[in-house]
Every structure is written in C-alpha cells, then in structure tokens.
Length: 441
Ligand SMILES: [Fe+2]
Image 1 (cartoon, rainbow, N blue to C red):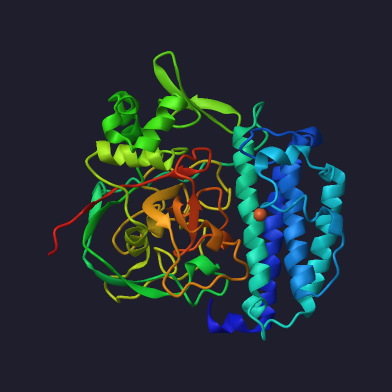
Image 2: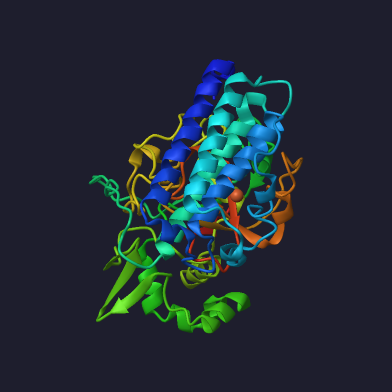
C-alpha cells in the first residue's frame, strides 16, 4: 500500500471491496448446490458447508461487531458451535448447526452491522483498527474458508456444480525456459513490517542469510511426476521418510489424490469431471511426503522456506525485497492464477508477466508449494491479535506452504504469506518445485 492509501477514505473503500468480494465468492460456493448438500458431510476431513458459512459470520461478529464495535453478542448461544478449536471437523455434523436459511440470515445481518461499524470506526489509535487491520483480517478469513469450501466441493461426489473458464496457456516463447536458475548466496529481507494486512506470522521483516542454491523455474508438472509414479516411486522405500512410507503402505497410495488408472491411461477427477491427467500442468493434491520423495528420487530436495521467499521476492539489482515476484503492484489477472477465476492450475510456463527477477514463474497462484521447512516464528514474533491465529501451530508438526493456489484470493496471498499444514495432507491444492545446493561462487 502507498501512503496515500493510509488516508481513511481509501482504506475504508479497500476494506469494503475486500469484504464484498469474499461474500460474493461465499455466495457462489454455498449457492451452487441444494440446501441438503450444505448440511451433509462430504468427507470426514471437512465440515459441512453450512458450518463454514455460519462460522464466517460468527468470526466476523466476534472481531468486527464485538471487538472493534464494542457491541453485545447477537446470539451468544452459537459461539461454541462455531469455535473451530472446540470441535474437530469430523464432529461438526452432529452439532446443533443453524439450518441453511437461518445461517444465511445470520451472516447477512452481521455483514450489514459490520459495514456500519466500518463506516464509523476510527482507523487508528489501537492496533486492531490501525489501517483497517481487523477488516482485512476478516476478509482474509472468509477467503480462506472459501478455499476450504472449494476443497469440500472437490471431495464431494456427484455431478459438477461449479464451472469456470480455462486459464491462459503458456506463451509460445522463442527459447525454452531453463529448467532451473541459480540464486547467489547472501542476505535478503524476509517477512514484512510494512504490509498493513499481513498476519502475525509474516512479521517482522528481518535479514536472513541464504547460501547459494538452484531452484526450478517452474513447479513440478504432472508429466515429470508421472515418471516417478511409473518408475515405481510408490513401491520403493528408499525415496520416503519413514512416516511417509507408513502412509503409502497404510493407505495403499500409488499416485496423487484423485488420480486413477483407466485402461492404459491416467485420469483424474476434478470438481465432478473425470478427465485425462494433463501432463503440462503443475502436479496437484500431493502430500509433503510425496513431494519430498519425488525430490529425492530426482536427486534434488525441496527448497527451504527462506530459499522460496528469496527466489520470489529478492531483486538482485536493487537488493530490496518486492511485495510480489513481479514487483509491488497488487496481483492482476496478467500476473497469476488466483481467486478461483479458473478451477485448475494454468499450464506450465504461463504468466510470463508474473515472473520474478530471476525468471522464475508461477510462484504465486496455481498450486501451493510445499517447502522443506517447519512452521516456526520469525525472530521478534509477537502473537496478534490472538495466540490461536499462529502461535499454537508453531513447531515440527506442520510444514510451510508458499505462494497460494488458484483457489486463493489476492487479499490472502502475498510474497510473505505463510500457509502451514500436516505433511500427510493431500486434499489441499498443493504441489511443489525442487531445489539443490550450489557451490559458492
Ligand atoms: Fe476459521
């Protein structure tokens, strides 16, 4: 954001636009199926869609109406039903959930009041409202649940309910892209202290030394991953961490989630449609263990989180870190496949305008990229606005994913944005690229 936007007028407009865009997407995701499908549980890994819907409203009520607006609870009896920490997803269908019509009415009522709070609240004086932070946080929260709901749609059985235009193809470029680039050793600025809506785990900006490394110009594609599959990758314990190998055996894994062999060909199920696996698209729906095993098979490794961020943000000419690989401009449709505009990753090599100064493509959007790193706090981390946002997840249980997917809205995706998940997870929109050490120059 520029300093001009710290004027409360544009900040309020930006917050209204972010909240409105999130709600529009929520409406699509909860309006494209019959109400009975909203209350059904499509997978024990996910909540019923109607839980996500009212939970979105409940978080908005907690933060915008009560914490910012100083208002009393609208429906105190439902707080515990929609507390994600009190009830694991598998239990949520048994809770006394608001039925769809009531849930819609509740979220609309909360939104009307929240916009009223936004129109009047001072946007300075306390950290929660500084630069409209709480409003940006709630817009990001809703968009994150919109991504979660899209995962539920992917797991749902039955005919397709969603559709979207195809993403752009790679430009027919004169010279083929190099498969990897070298990033020289040295320090860079990781994280941010400047992004007004950055979350606590992205803060503060700090200098990080990264030894020289090579990193893939593109995410690993289905074609490359298929060679690992057909080389017996899932039958060879040499490539796997012990926990990953145990998962392969226990769940009889043989390919990414949603793939299956039909006759002699590999097909995949994508939002209710079965189609041939597109070989020129980034691989999707792989766990951290699968990404790690592929990298070992290929004689490479996953990039660390610091390597990923340096590859995405560091400008070797100026020495500064950019907001995004392409610069400081907010993401546009020319830069990256974001915001559920397309319901699949773009073919490898697309989005030339979104490339980093090193010429690395598709860092933002398309697929979340697993990194080698555990989810840990940066030096100087302070929990804000609550411990359960990030702090309770720090440690060696979760691996960091970077860059966002086609399912992520730009408001919840930055060069500094950190996502985390368990290394066994496969239903998320996850892929990866690989790296290797370089000799110092
Ligand atoms: Fe949530």
